[in-house]
Length: 125
Image (cartoon, rainbow, N blue to C red; front, side):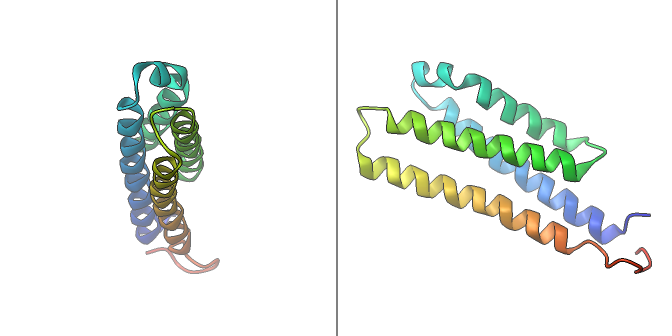
């Protein structure tokens, strides 16, 4: 039986993953139309993974997939920004740092959720 602490930790990490993905999706949506169309499949995959996470039976697997898809979207957004002649290097660097912070929040939540797992042989609850 899964402990309540593990379930709450996993659900918290899942909720954070959904929020970060929502933020990444909003950044994608704000891109100029041409750039947005080019990376739309990546954005839609990240959105779908995050939405699927909400009802997943296997939170660990679904969470890993959603985090990977979110990281792919962040990288695609950075590549789109780097190719935008209207943005200078400092703006692209700032975007890269902002997205790195968002992805670090995901990694931190994942670590905290995995640390809430019970030790082997510990009774549930």
